[in-house]
Image (cartoon, rainbow over all chains, first blue to last red; front, side, top):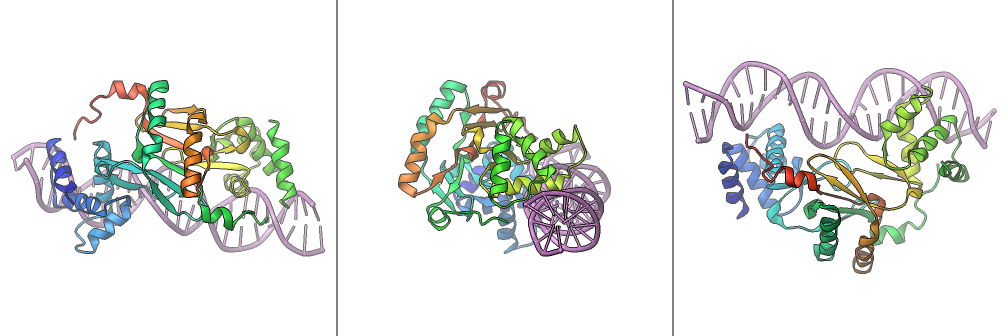
Length: 149
Length: 149
DNA sequence: CTCCTTGCAAAGCCTTTGCACGCTG
DNA sequence: CAGCGTGCAAAGGCTTTGCAAGGAG
């Protein structure tokens, strides 16, 4: 919630106009406290008022991403999820079978990030880091995943 | 190329019928030697004959993924890319600005993978690992990424 | 007053699906 | 010969875009 004024402020500073829609979208995103889809942002605003169009949500989120204030990630497939950068970095473990999502602190990745920067000059953005695989439940539950045609 | 008979063999073994289309798709995927989109597979077949439909390409790739013979990844946004598991694991560094793609050996990730397995029972699949960020070129070229509205 | 933003609706991209015919095993 | 696999075309999900009206600065 404290993120909200900050983000709005940053937008204004960069010459963007502050509209009620943008305030609501930023507010919804900030209060979500984590990763949300554009549609969830849209819905959480609709709960109170139908004053925002889904296209505007996409456009505003896009602006925030372009300005580097918000991260956009395609965790598995399908919808993108958004989060304020103030949310802090973490890794996402996405189970490719059941779709479950676990967030992990990025401590273990720091050396990797530094190595990538040193060797390749690549500046990794941890907000965007998602790792696909099988969660413990799906590993034990499906030793034989496929059952043929 | 040597992968092709193997994959076909595995498909047959699992009860799938081997059609000319499937052979061509597998062949195209194997000879691509890396990550390709469904559309590229489709095109590389079209170059020789228009005997395969794009829907069939998607269906066959899907089958291969389901059977665990092929990996499917959404590197950045948009299209998914496919690769045979024989291609071997590696990390993808995707520049969120210019879209450039660099493959890195996964040595540096092994400790992370093991940690995830130990702590969370999560079996990470490196074929699917992509890291978003800024490549060296885009970092120096755009110290100020945004230019406002 | 200027022109950035919005709403609306339509289009876009990538992918999936229903159905009847054809081919594999 | 049984039934899986294919082609075709249409639909689907998510996101973007063109245009005119409206509101911020």
